[in-house]
Image 1 (tube, rainbow, N blue to C red):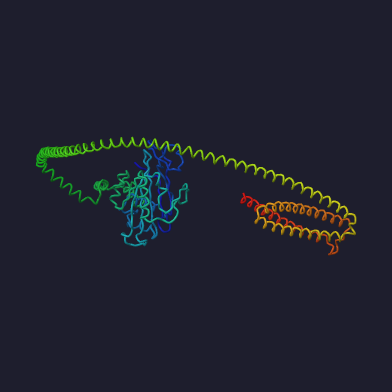
Image 2: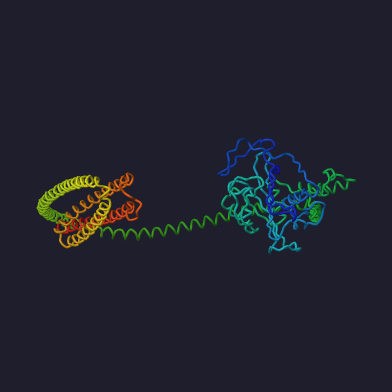
Length: 571
């Protein structure tokens, strides 16, 4: 026995109060199921916390008049009572077509739970207008019914009513169907594909009323019970009104309607008449039956014996044919094998002679190979000795060159330090000499600073030009390039020292100028005697000198690379 667990209504209902996607949930509030059947949960479903429980044994739906109670019952009866007048009060059966708009594909799905095992089954109905156009012709109103066992792959919440169904946990009041609504054909294809992929769903699709009634009976859902429910709610009255009969004939009619279909009363009468005729001829028919049974028994034995004899003859003839064929094949195979044995004996003799000759040839070839290997090894040893001697000479030359380069770097650093020390001493003496007559030599100091910076810039440009000329010469001649690279490196170091000296000197002059201005020795009010302008001009000259030094360094690097390439080419 099954109990109603959930109801899902999608895109169906009167125009003023439609069910967009509504689920009425009655689960988990009844008594525990006594003998729960094992079930396979969904992949992302939470683990069950206890035995399944039956749905609510009773429920009350409080709605005002016109709130939709009768509409809900009509929709439920349309699933369980196809072909009947599915409206309350015995009105026209076309009222359900008023619950469907032109673009709708309405769904009514009912989930039933077994009271003993807790197993669920979903039965539902899908309907739409053919051609997407509302009509008064009932033939254009398409209806179909389906059923399946909910499980992994398909459930009441995951009905493919839309092209995309959400996999998020269901939220009350929020539809799980997303995207465009499927048509009836699309819905049928979707659940059919699900049934092929998951055979345990037992998907069933039907469009004929009688076959659907038979299928409901096979599932354990008796449509007659819902017919009683419909009659009890025909005028929205009490159930006692169904059995309010005035005489015995009315009760007999009620009982006959319960156990038989009114459409089959004519067939029942024919059946009773035929059964009466057969009872009148009972003795004659029984004698005929006994004679026929005995004859059939004897004839059956004769037929079986004849079939056995025919089968044995066929088996014997086939065995005889196969034996003769096998004897002929064996004789031919024996003659062929004797010829092959003679040929193989001759081939064995020839192969023995060929093996002896091959052994002798192999011995000679081994001796020749050994001699050739010995001579090849001797020549290789001689060549290796010469190559080792040449590599030792190259190693000595490389070590000598490496020691020379290391010494040159030390000498260059020493010379650069000596030059830097001399320039610093000269700068200190000049600063001490210039600091005494600071007020008298204000203009002279500024002019000297500008001329010195211009001279440094010109020297940097000349050095850069000279380095470029040296780089061109170094690319033409290997030895000259090596010497020019050394000179360029020396010049670059000298330029770097001069730039550092100029920076130090510029900082000292700026500091001395600022101190002279603060002490009142310099007048910074006149535009031609602005120390800031002179400092800016000196800074520009310093930038030009630094740029010239960078160019010299790049030229020196290019010359060094050219020297290395020339040395590599020469070696």
